[in-house]
Amino acid sequence: MAKYLITGANGQLGTEMRHLLAAKGVDYTAYDSKAMDITDRERVLEVVKQDQPQVIYHCAAFTAVDAAEDEQKDLNWAVNVEGTKYVAEAAAQVGAQLVYISTDYVFDGTNSGEYEVDAPTNPRNEYGRAKLAGEQVVQAALSDYYIIRTSWVFGQYGKNFVYTMQRLAKEHNRLTVVNDQMGRPTWTKTLAEFMWHLTQTQAPFGIYQLSNDDTCTWYQFAQAILADTNVEIAPVTSAEFPQKAYRPRHSVMSLAKAKATGFEIPTWRIALAQFLQEVDGATSKLD
Image (cartoon, rainbow, N blue to C red; front, side):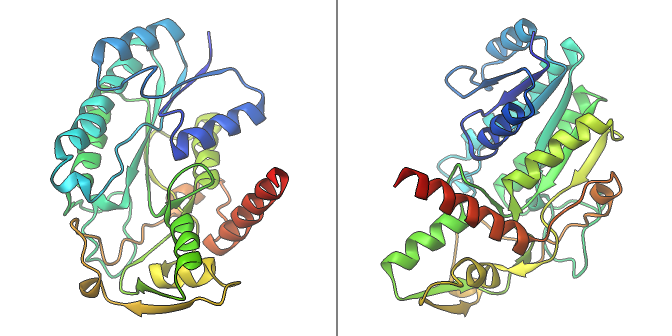
């Protein structure tokens, strides 16, 4: 019987979580969508009853924000809401704690200050609506839960903004990046460590918000990512870079509740530097 169970085991966060638990030397099981499709209620119940975990790190999610607006709207809802409901119900049946990952997109981005955990939600895209509904099904099924809202996620094990900028920098001499959306980047390692921290310190159950500290625009983030290149980066407005899904203009979430647990949060610049160093190290080992 493993104490910990990870959903979305091969995703960006799930992979990070697997590496963290392996480094801790703890017993865990991990399932990707082939081994446990979370939209299959019976399979979810079967696996969770079989493993009897004490903690479920629910990393499985649909994250294609623009696709969620139209052609994959149903899949977005099936995974982020129905799938989350099945995982939460299974957790309740075996008495497991559940850690669910939500998003800054539950807010509309019109607040000039920081969003507190109890601030009114008002998602303005389909992804945000589904993730908020996911929060609600977790709260309906369980009392022993941690909901963690995060933003601008990057890490070693999946597609993300850092890798996109690095790839584009090899293909173009000049890049344009939006400069009127303010937020906080989040390294998957910081997020995984916070997930572990909450469950190990027996922090009060409820909603938390976690990203790396300090704020930036996507343009400023891109500048930091490509600081050692000769690529020109030009700031543009969101209107000049239209996307299907609405993006919050100011989705800076308060980290006060997370910090109050005793968890030390590095700034996004420190996190980015450590991430780039680790990726460079991993690449050099392969050469």
